Structures are given as C-alpha cells and as structure tokens.
Length: 343
Image (cartoon, rainbow, N blue to C red; front, top):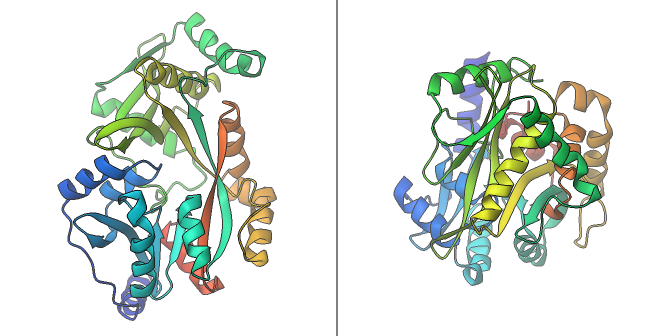
C-alpha cells in the first residue's frame, strides 16, 4: 500500500502545473532570510527540506506540492514592496495555488486577486521591551519560574550533549498523540543539533538531567536579528507543568535583556477564526470552528485547545494568520492535510 500511495502521488504531482523552480542554494536562501525574514515562518522556509522555490536571486516563495496542487508556505521572502509582484507571478505560474499561514499584507493582495481568505488561527507576539511579566495577570508565569528554582531546577542556554537531546526527544514523542511521524510543512522535523543563528534554552532537574528544551528560529530585517520565534519544544513526559512555562519566561527575559524587539510563540491553529475582514469560505470557517471545539480532534489528532491555552498564559498580542485559496475544494484540503502529515 505505501508503494502504491507513493506511485499515485508522483503521478498526480507530475500532472500539477509546471512551476519554474529557482535553484537557490541553502546559503543563498539564508542570505535572503537575513535581509527580509521578518515573519515567523521565514527561517523555516529556508532550511526545511523537500520544499521548492519560486522567484529569483532577490526573493522567493517557498512551496510544497501534493495531489496535483501547490501550496505556498508563509509570505514571500523578499523586499516588502516587491512581495505583491512575487505573489501575482506565482499565482499565475502555479495555477491558483493555496497560500498557508500568511500575514495580513499577503492576504490583502490575494483577496484583490479573487481569492477567498479564511483565518487559520493566531500567532502570539510579545513586543519587547514593553511586554514584561509584571502585574497580576502574569502572576502564574512568575510562579512557575519561582517554583522551579525553589525545587532546585536550573535554567541555561547553549551546548547540550546530543545524546541527552535524543533521549529527551524520544521520551517526548512517546507521549504524543501521533507517535509514528512528525508533522511537516507548517512544522519542520526536529533536529538534535541547532541550525545557524538558532537559539536553544534548557531546563535541568536537581539531579542534573535534561528535563525540557526550547528552540527558537531568528527573525531578521536588513541583516540584523530583530526577534525570535518558537520552533521546537521538548519536555520529559513526567516533567512538571511549570517546566515549559518557566523555561519560556527565562528565554523571553534573556531576549529582552539583549535588546531583542519581538518574540513570537507560533501558530495556535483554528483559534478565533471568525470576524474576518476578507471574503471567505463559510464552509471552511465552520469546519475550522468545529475542529477547534471537537473533543475527538483534541484528544486523538492535535491538542488545539491546549496549544492556545498555553500561549495565552503570556498575554501577548494575538495576530491573525490566514489561509487563502480560489476554490477550496475538499480534494485540495486533503492534499494540504497530507502535505503537513496530519493524516
């Protein structure tokens, strides 16, 4: 059966619109990200394997292909005034591709091209230094850090033995809803080692064992790091609920001390998908809302409510992210779900 599925996928992908691929090297993609990578998925578009690239030496759109359809990942990595042109050219070349986890400016361009634009969820932004953890509403966050320190846990950043990271990751995966594979596209597979310019923060038990880690991708503008976005989390299945909260606070406090201007906590899928300013698909809006509220989805597929509740503990700015398509058929959605390995 797997070989038949692979054969059918290749057959369908061969029938997809022939998009001219730009053969950018890893180094060239990272160079463009350092100039224009100011959104949460920018770094991942440059380093994630099995993506294709449309554009030129001055910018690109990353995309994946599944079941005859093309899916753009995030916004264009290009000079902001030039992004609408990359979008229009890609729409024409790729025969009405989908755009997944995009920001408001990209959504506005696509709406003008006749696309339906639905909310996909929320990306939580902590604007620094204005955002801190003072005040009553952040009391639980401060408590988590105090509890860990009182119990003898220690925070750190930097070098960790890779075998420790591997053991922690294996332990974490054993408790996941889906254990056999990691999701892709919207999330890239976890790597034991850090990529260039990434940051890793760690929590150790009183006995010196690695309990949790938190990896961040960089955000860039004009060659300078302006912020970081959460890319990977790993936590021992027996770790206290305070571990992830306290470690996140530790990392954000360090970034603030370094003069970093923003930290994003990543996508909360299907959260607050109503109140849309764009023409949208009511079918997919209702489907997203039902998925978020579904006990079966949260229990057996992906803990949507748990993701959202964790990020809301930090009281950041909730920035809508969008998904855009012309037709929005069930077959196209099936292709996306298979691309991200949700099914």
